[in-house]
Amino acid sequence: MLKIFSVLTFLFSFTTQASIPLSVSPRTAKPSAVKIDLSLILAEARLEQSLIGFEIEGGEYTDSTGYFKCENDRIIINIKSPKHEWSSTFYEGMQLLGFLFPHPRMQISPTKQQVLEKCGQHFTWQAAFRHRGFHLHTMHSNEWVHGFLMDENPKIAIELVRWLARNSQNVFDLNLLRDELSSIASRIKAPFALAHELGINAGLSIGAALQQQNSFKLIPLGRAITGMKAEKALRKNLKKLMAAINFDFITMEAGTSEFTSVDYEQALNWIEAARQTLDEEQKKLMIKVHVSTNQNDDFYGNFNFLPQYSHPEVGVLPHTVMFYGLWDKKVPMYGNEDFSAMRKFTMEQNNIRPTWYYPETSYWILMDMDVPLFLTDYLVTRARDMEGLSDTNIEGHFNFTTGHEVGYWLIDWNVALLANKRHQFNPYAGLELLGEDLACWKRLVGFQTKHFKKNQLISILSFPNLQDDFSKKHRIHERNTVKELSKSATLREKEIADLDLALSELPNPACVRSDELRTMIEVTHERIKHAWLTRLALRHKKKSHMRNQLIKQASMIRLNAKDKMLGFKEKYDRYPEAKLFDRNSPNPTSYSFGYVYNSVSLHYWEREEEMIRKDRYNPFMMNIYNFLDILF
Image (tube, rainbow, N blue to C red; front, top):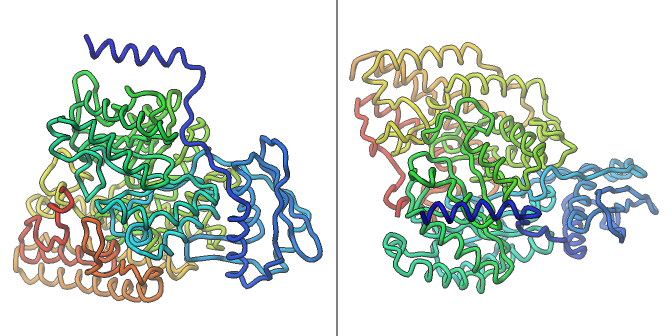
């Protein structure tokens, strides 16, 4: 009865509300900070500091407009907008003048003549979402771990914050890892201060009791399990965090992992305790809503949807994974058939509480950038979801990203661009601005959509992690393991036929103008050939001449792809100081190697060869992930 009464009381409270509670209030950028950033942009472009200026009109405005006013061989960007959107309007003007920022360490600049040709033109800025930005997943051993959590000189972090502002983003967060709070606070202070000056809200991603991947947590594991003094620990540690770091919001995990819950009512109590504690300092709480399907209660239902029973000021981050989206008809991940339940939850909660959609542009862990596979469906799916959600006035779009290496900067940049309605949710917006051949890219994207997603080659080309090897019911992604293929001619021949078809329709990537992106497409195509050969080898007996010959051919494909990736590293490793391509890359995450080490070593290509060559399918064979460290 207590449960029923509490839920009915909760639901009744919504019928008396006049409006949906606001999440974090948008910040207003300081003109002095934007002037400094403009100076840096002009210096990088080798243009006179006096060439471009800006002026902000006083008054109250509902729309954001700009005008390129010419004065003595220079342009003044005249801005009329709501106060919190003036800086995004300014940066929209800079993009229209020809300044592009695809990557934190990449700037494309116009000539002086090209700038002055815009004299007299008017423009508008219209955001697709009130809140738009990125979750930097610093549980993975990426550049942002170094920039925000390791380096005394936070150059990488500062560059990322400027990239966000220059692309009209206004919110971000990152995972805190277990470390001395004073050390975390000292490193994070400067980039968070700059974010605030540039009009960006900065958040922290933590766990109430999250145990996995060295996450910073508020409640020790013992107290989380027993419940003894757990809420007291949460309040105390959250107050310490607020005293140490000037953040705007917390994104919190309610369970002990993505797949393990705590007592449902205890979790609701923790959520409310966190909300109350943050509210004392006018800070906001957002709860992550995962897509796992193995945690259910007879009364409350799916543990991930538990925040629907929390106070309406508690925001939610409905999550989707990989290159799958809310409207995809088939999503064979985490035990799901599709994400229709998450879509329904998102729409319902948007009428009740702050709701930011929380998709991905890089999953990592043997699924995309560390295979490596350059998955173009991220462009298409993110665009489709953004359009559908903007049309229904979802408050925020908050994209999960692992990093910008191996070409994945393009995908994140495209997501940032599509927060601007001028681009009309065009999945090729970034490529068009880069001067790429769009007909070429549409062939490449169409090929991957048909074969990687619809025909599910992704389950063949990516690699299983330990959960896939040990569980058939709750695999990260549905797939046939190599061990299962070795025992089933039917499964093996189906995969060979699917790979045969893809190879017969393989498009030529020579039309890609960017050497960096072309190389990643080429290596992705090499993996198709490699997987085809390893499966052909399974047709033949262990140690037979034909099996060995086919594995030898597969290894030649791998070595050719490895040569390409070694050359790629020499040209396009934009963060050499962080050792992201190295096997030994000390950092505070659960991973002792850089997050793109596997993409240049092709270690798991070789592992697949060795499993088949030796006819040994032990999940721990040649496995470089320390799963105990990941779990604890």
